[in-house]
Image 1 (cartoon, rainbow, N blue to C red):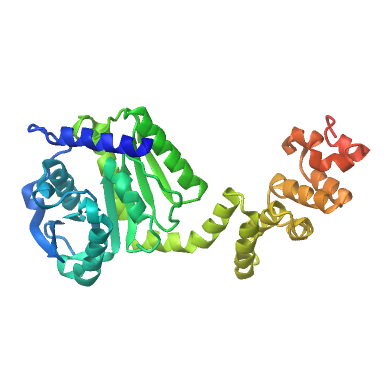
Image 2 (image 1 turned 90 degrees about the vertical axis):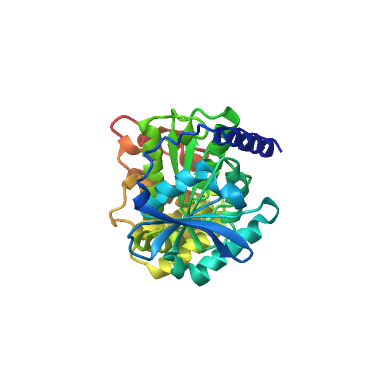
Length: 375
């Protein structure tokens, strides 16, 4: 409830700012000849304004401005400025009707229209990104994170947060944090990004330390303009075929690593087992598999898996520590000590000397010798 109220207050504050008659958008206005606008283009019983680069080759990457407005509200100077700048820089930019009461239905109708008729607009339906700012992040991010909305290939979230639990690992997101925003907003964004990172989602945090909320119309600084440029570059890069193909290739291993980060080692071990079948010669992958087995308390299997990686070029501590732990918990103290001996003393963590895992061998002379100077 607190976050919801915070988001609502932020929306009201932004609305007050952008309704000012003397609004200034602190980015050079593109020449009128650099873009074209088609207003009130129909999709279903709704309308959208379409901004496109002048003389651009098609198909074009798409940027949807996710604002809960409709009708004449779409033409507000703040929204128009964003659309004109993005279009002049090569993005087919859409300002659609999105009504609060039917938000998801309206958005899905727009995606369906782009899938069916986007080519007539010059849109590349495989390169759709969404921008949302302030309270629209609260409304929009949960919509975009729905795993069925794979038509959306990237997202940009400005100075806002949302109540979400699970991130898509196939959706790159640029979070832009205004460092001078209200503390509840900055804290919520920090927590949100941390959650995404814990889930190993493809998120990027751009922190603007000297930026206020709605810095596009508040802070007349080069840093403001740089953030806008970075945003547009991100949309182009993150929706590109090469980036998307790379993201897909890395998704299985990224998902396995996410299980590890979440502490679900049983799921991680199962995921890595499938990956190892496909790439049995990938020693880094097999090290991760062995560590997942160790985390899942499959000590004998972990000890055996890691033993096969001797002499394969892995760092002595990277391999030696999990192998020593696995073999020790399997009950093979000799193997555990041998693994610890394989680690140069300067890389052997001192806390191992009193680690309860190694309690059964801590009285042995060869174990104690590992921690003596020159041992």
